[in-house]
Length: 154
Image (cartoon, rainbow, N blue to C red; front, side):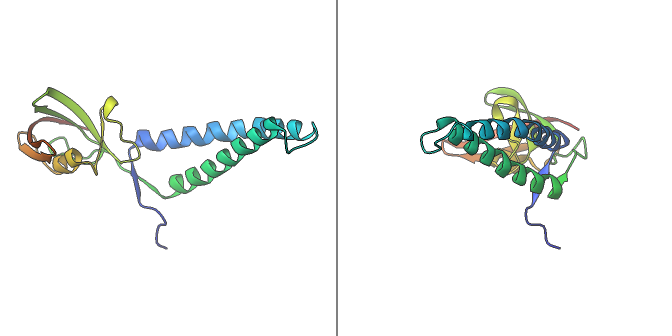
């Protein structure tokens, strides 16, 4: 059977999906109860509480379906080697802004503010499969930027 989605995640990213699924599953009965209570108040056409609860329940159900699919078909990948940059590794680089450390993650997990760089971003793609000591040039709108790979952590 062909996978309906192709999703690589770090163990941390996979755990985040499980945590979100648990939190939404636990909050669903409360939202359903709010919707039933609002429905019992009468006229639904002008009942903002009912419509808000119905919308929230729709969001929860939709997100739970998405999470179930992602959890079922996710490939959990750990960093492999401490000399080569691979998915899930943390890489320390020296560039024009000094030293920086990034963990190479999927686009879904990416958050550069906390040091998580997408494997599909220009910097992430340029760093993948490179070794400690290599200098990598990356094309950006302002020209080219050079980074030297100082360290790779699993």
